[in-house]
Length: 628
Image 1 (cartoon, helix red, strand yellow):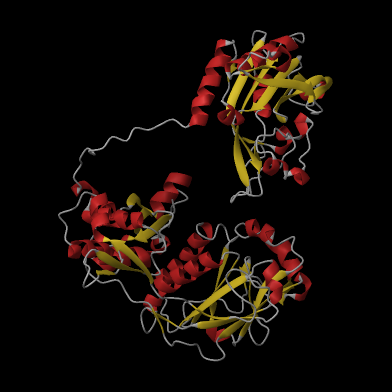
Image 2 (cartoon, rainbow, N blue to C red; image 1 turned 60 degrees about the vertical axis):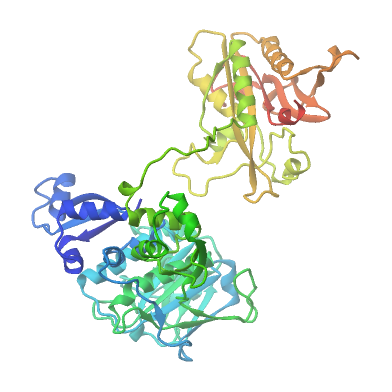
């Protein structure tokens, strides 16, 4: 959860006298949690000792845990405004544009070159803003918290704020080779090109983590004014020329993005929070964004299209008063009561004049977290008070049922346990080395058609789902096989009394291009046997017993009177296993698994460091749900 710090004296100026206890109670009523009450001196003393805390401020502040989807509460202004509305001290403000259309020069042209790196930009102007030290710091902190939260560390959206009085519109947003971009980055002394900027900022404590977002791109996104002054090089840094200071009155806000929807939410949040300090509170000046005629169209914009931002209109949503009340067993509330509770949560609403059960909800730009009826139910529950809700036992019984795949998995676990095998439970995340290299397998993306054509086929070379920002080298991707986990367990327990029998039943994940998320889960079962000498018959017998319990028998043992389905073992070529000592497990012409003696390189110090003859099998379990 994001944590927002609010000074006690600043909070008291807005909502009146508060103590730690009273503010904690107010936060609880509003659905927040007061994490800590402290000051800079106390915090430094805890971390670095009393000597380091000498001269630190004793100004008390509250630290509040904020829900991750409440972007409007990520700063003092948002928290104070929401609490004042909750207490009935003000109504939800109406955010408006100063004019329906911006002045002719207040526009930004988007070049087609940006489509390959950060295709979207939105912008707005705040006129007559009055900053002081606390407001300025809150302005900076909000941008940082948005960058870490909804912006996903600037990969989706990057915010740039500028002193408009130092710039001359109109603006252009384009992508240029780094050698063609010259400017003085924020808080730097020298003017430099894009390549030099990457070198200088690679040692910057805060900004170096953002450099990989665009470092390998042949072009960098950049925003210029009409004098070719660089405003920013998103998502890395703004220019020194347009730096905002305490005396800044007119603020130009731009957000470049790879996600158009989130860019709008971020821009609207910044505008909503700090338009309060404009000469005309809660009023923003629009900016026209013009996409070039050769800009490649997408789902959000078309070539040559002109869009006006910020888009401050509320979003209309219809609901049923009776349904909202029934979810919380609050049937005694009237329609006006429900509307009053929602308004306390900064959600303007009204019932239809003729049909009282029909509720019109005008979701404001600050409440992008409201998407469904369940979000309205939650707000009503908070405003009514969780402690005031009546608890009752439902009149209907809804017993949970076990999923067929889980039921089958439990039966297979029991079968293998009865055969003397010990179950393992391993991480689903593994390293690329463990999943492929140590198994002597190669990832073959050209075979992605296989899970589409034959969903039940066992294919050891299918593409893996990789983590985008792994924090540890051992957790780089989601396993495509259960064997790495079993072999790691065996390697860590080779000192145990021999023989060792291990098995695991669990999910693997493989790429599947026709799925909405591009991948799918596959439930598998695997087992291994390790001893001082090879005893392939043990693992072969375990497989036969497992297949027999599933209603299958070897094809060579089948008779005309048998009602069991058959499976066959055919020579395989999986590099994980020793050549000539392995077999594919085939049912109805489909390879559902593999069995054999593991290759010496897999069990040696070059692999999983088992150094014992080891045999194993692995099969897809899900086809049996259709066959049984």
